[in-house]
Image (tube, rainbow, N blue to C red; front, side, top):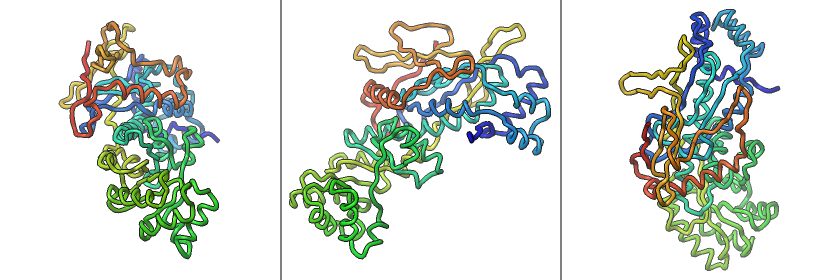
Length: 427
């Protein structure tokens, strides 16, 4: 049975709907916009991720008998509102930045247009998906840049909610991670999966040698052996004795990783295992990865820092009404004026301007209808009259991200806190 997503929302979305139905304003055309007032954590750019998941969740946003019964029994809304919800189907339009692209402060990364009643109900669900996935992808992108050409395995499923782990693996792969340990993410999204053994497997056996023998017999000499359960040097010697020069890789999960990697590389070479790779794990983030740039490391595994956004677990995105239909039928801009939380009214278009070397120079957000010469349009159509038209394979988003990163100014890749890589201008 397909689970409805209709109650993955906040109580006040429905009470606003009820009041708007009573006032007669519920059916006014409205435009909502998702944007970030700033990039949290002093980051230089954000990565768009989650749009595909929004579309999946939208398809299941239906108030069935179970959802309506819950709302009725708990007196959340009145009977006329329940009747409206029973027939609810989003029939408006959604435009947005494509997944894998970058965003900056005030970028209108998703624009939802429909009646107020239709659009307001989607606020919590859209923000829940985008805030999580954009935060994970933004952190993952920084890790990938720090790693250079060395691959990174996503392995954070045990450090977060079970469903968040699947979404995190998707966002990480979009941003350049090579694989995931999460089998559900592999099944749903076609992400390559990887994994071999934990310390428990070694501890189960009477000796490290027996554990290695069993793993090699099962997975072949090209497997990755975990060598820091007891003594690293002794484990490496045993691994090469058993697997020979065809030993695929060893993994180090503790200690001074840079020093340990150097010692293991020297030992592997001395034993003739010149092609055996060294993988490192152990609470890595982008800063730890960058610190290992000069170490003889061939790949990384990242868990906790990835699924928590490397200390920035939300993208600070908001969903604001920016235009509404007047009594005369026109669409007029509206905006908050509250101190510290202002918004800019009006239905937006967005373009990215390039310099002479084809690198990003400016994010231009316009309500005037201006189409800048040479500007790259950023908003694409996701939903048209309630029908989803903007799905794409995850591989396309992954390729788009790699291209977008290559167009950033070089200082955008610095890990130190700073301002947005390019300015956002308004017209």
